[in-house]
Structure formats: structure tokens, C-alpha cells
Length: 401
Image 1 (cartoon, rainbow, N blue to C red):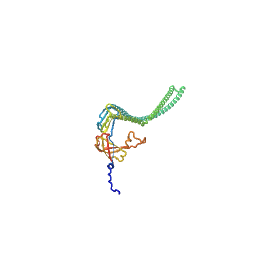
Image 2: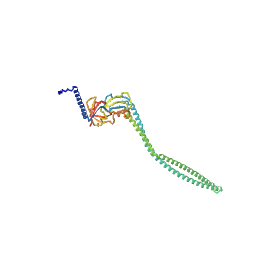
Image 3: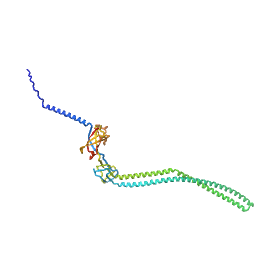
Image 4: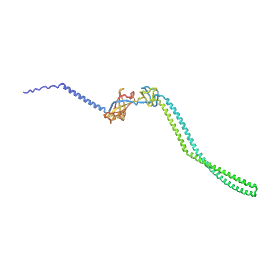
């Protein structure tokens, strides 16, 4: 007959129970981590953060604008300065001499301009007066020609009359001679006929001389008419003469203006020998000392303004929702505590694009790297940015709207 007595069950080994409890704990922890991850993601869904951030400032290189020897540096390294405070002084002796030379050139050029202006007035008066005088001389010469022509005509008439008188006297002489030879007249009457003939001959000679003189006067008058006409033609272009004088005056004034500009440049160069702080801030990296020779563009020092801001370099996957005006929490590693700011602008390119040698993905082996885009952040209040040097590391959290 079979034995129906139930056998007691054996208890599970203790090790198996412990493993089960461990798996349950791990499952709970994993669930908690996942829950925390999603809860954190939900709570921070409107925030983006980066630790790639630093304070910055618009650092200004203070440079020399003229060459020369530094007479004195009026500041020390890391000294606080105010806008307009004298920083350095360059020897102005050479530039003062240039001012004196430029002033002399200006005085000479101005004197030439004044002389040219006077010449314009003289040329205007003399050209107009010369033309009027030439025309008057031409009229006088023409009148003299008319008078000489009249005298020539009168002299010709006198010659004709003298010739007629001589012919009559010669005929009377011939008759008187024949009658005298025949004894018909006395010697006195014959002498009278001879005298009359000689007088007529002398009168003809005088008339011929007068006619020759009248012709000479006529020729001289005609010559004077030609000279007067030429003088009129020479004096006629008065507008061109005046224009030439005015052009010379303009050239003289242009030279005077150029000399004046050179004087102003020389004076400015004298002013450039004193170098002033362009803004409030701190002098840093002092690079010049008394006795040192500097050239235009030589950096004497760096001026770090008191006003700072923050540049945060966000990943390209983080910037899609960042907008100007977003509130920002800022933690500065050097000083601790939390400060506040606002987004001002987002750069138009990535940091790599503005590097000295930007990457060219069309060459070599391409490796995709997440790029970073600079975002400029200003302090919410002036007190938040007080006492911070440029270049301090920071953690930035932007609250997206």
C-alpha cells in the first residue's frame, strides 16, 4: 500500500532572496533616476545653460598718432584713470617748428593772394581804359587822315594854280623879251616880266613842296590809323584779360588755403604729442617709458573700461529660442554669488568662423563638431558688473521666454 504522507517543502536558499531584493532596489533606483531626469527636464524646459562664458570689456589700445621721443608717462601700470586724463607726452619740439614754418608759408601765400586780387582790379581798370584810349586814338588818327587828305587836295590845287601862273608868267616873259629885243618896251618893263616869271617859278616850287609835305602828313596819319587799329584789336579782349587775372587770383587763394590746411595739420600734430585717456577705466600692459622712441600706431598701453559685460558661447543646438531681452543668471567663479543680466544680441557667426584660420569643411576629412555661437549679455544693474576684471570665467543660465 502506497505511503500517502506529505513531505515538508524545503525553504528557498537565503542567497536567492537577497538577489531578488537587490534587483528590486536597482529597479526602484533606475525608475527614480528616470523620473528625476524627466522631472528635471520638465522643470528646466525653458532654460539653457553653459559654463563656456567669461566677462569681457571693450579694451582700447592707446596708441601714438605721431612719432617722437616719449618725454614722460603720467600713469603707472594698472592705475585708474578718468576720461581726458593725460597719459603720455611726446617731445613736441619738431612739430612746433613745423607750425612756425607752416605759418610763414601761409603768410607768404596770403600776401600773394592779396597781390593777385589787386592785380585783378588793376587789370580790369587798365584793360577797359586802354580800350577806350585806343578807340580814341583810332578816331583821332582817322580825323588826322581826313585832314591830311584835305591838305593834299589843297596843296594839289595850289600846285595847279602855281603852274598856271608860271605858264602865264613864262608867256609874258617871252613876249616881253621879243618886244625888248625889238626896242618896243623899256628895260624896266622887261625886268618886270623876268621878275614875274621867277616869282611864278618860286610859287610853283613852294606849292610842290607843300604838296609833298601834305602827302607825307597823309602817309603818317594813315600809319597812325593802322597803329591805332592794331592797338584797339590788342585791347579788345578785355574779358579774357580779366578772366586770366581772376584765374591767377583763384590759384593764389587755393595756395593760401593749402597753406592754411598745412598749418592746421601742424597744429594738430602738436596736439597729438599729448595723449589722453579716451574713457574712464584702468591702464594695463604699459608698453612705453620716458626716453623711448615711438612711431605712429605704437601701442603705449591698454585701457580697460570699468563697464564690463559677459560673452557666453552656447552650442548651436541651444540658441534657437534665445532672444534679446531674455533674463540671465550669472555665476562668476572668482567672486561667487549669483548676478543677473539680460541678453543683448546673438553673434552673426560662430566663434570658429571669426577665428584666425576658419575651418573649411570642403577640404580634408570632414568631422562634424558642434559649433558655439557667442551671445552678449549685459548686467541688469551697474552694481552687478562692479569690480569685475575682463576675462573671468562664468556659468550662465538663460531663462527663455
